[in-house]
Image 1 (cartoon, rainbow, N blue to C red):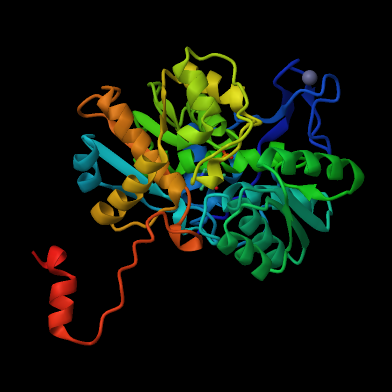
Image 2: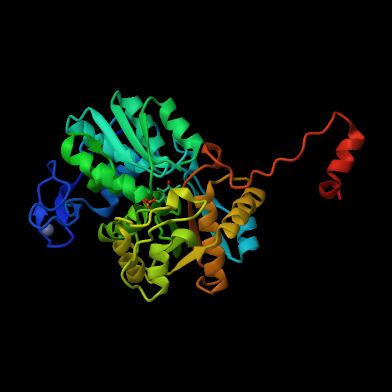
Length: 414
Ligand SMILES: *Cc1c(COP(=O)(O)O)cnc(C)c1O
Ligand SMILES: [Zn+2]
């Protein structure tokens, strides 16, 4: 007979990172005392590591298996978000000079990016609060994830994107039925507009008024990697950085697993990957872990990472420093080359953010950051099929003629 497991959150409240006050988990999204950032805090002391592990392992094959470590009481019925594969990638490893590479393939979530994870948690919270409208500022992928989750749960959605966002991503969000608002300007200007609207409308802005919940969804990538490695931490993890939510919550996730004795105490180094045209976090890390200086005009083909003033920028630098990690900033030419490289060596089509991560891994390897038998996890966060392929090298059309084929493809046939 199957055991019946009560799945519940161990949320204790929201702790202010600035002044340390513990606040109740109501509608607030900043500290009531000092307007500082607030983050969920959990009470796991009442459960043994074994109990917690059993509860997780008997859970659904989605991110909701980590419900005890997430801040919502009732996980909503949802798509199967998360529980994506972690692949050994020896061919890519050889090509970029790393002994043991593991790819966390998060390009296969319902809307084809890891953004389905934070959105799943934010939407569960929006439903708890009885909100009927979701909204977000997005560089592309978040718009799709919010639009899809809104459709799935019968909510209205407004998604705000810079006018330069890839047409395919905008079209995807619109197809899910969201109102897509294209805004002239950078992501940071779009974000300011959303900040004003959040004061005026009682909407669930997933990365603003729901941010303490939204950000928690990003912990689940690391949780899954650890469980997939047999409850062991990898030695290194390379994280693409936009707003810095994924990177800072990777650190939170490691601390939480250690705190609950689900993993042994050992270092797990977190490294930031950013494109050179918008690398406020990587630059700060490489410049001696200094304060983040915003980038006014991001210029990179890795548009999902084009956030010049990251909300969790300084938090990312601190988390990297504390973990003993580093960072790389890579050129768009390297990004294109590495998108192609991972496709040819491992059969995965990733969006440019994935190319940024592979190129950053290669740069870190060249600097001698990884030991010969250390495990290096690469987060692949978005799928190339969603939008612009980084390498649209379509060949000319030929006639149905074998000689023409042979001459046109002589270079490939050898
Ligand atoms: C949003 C995004 C990121 C960065 O996530 P943050 O939490 O904003 O730092 C990385 N990769 C892809 C594909 C994204 O869409
Ligand atoms: Zn405070």
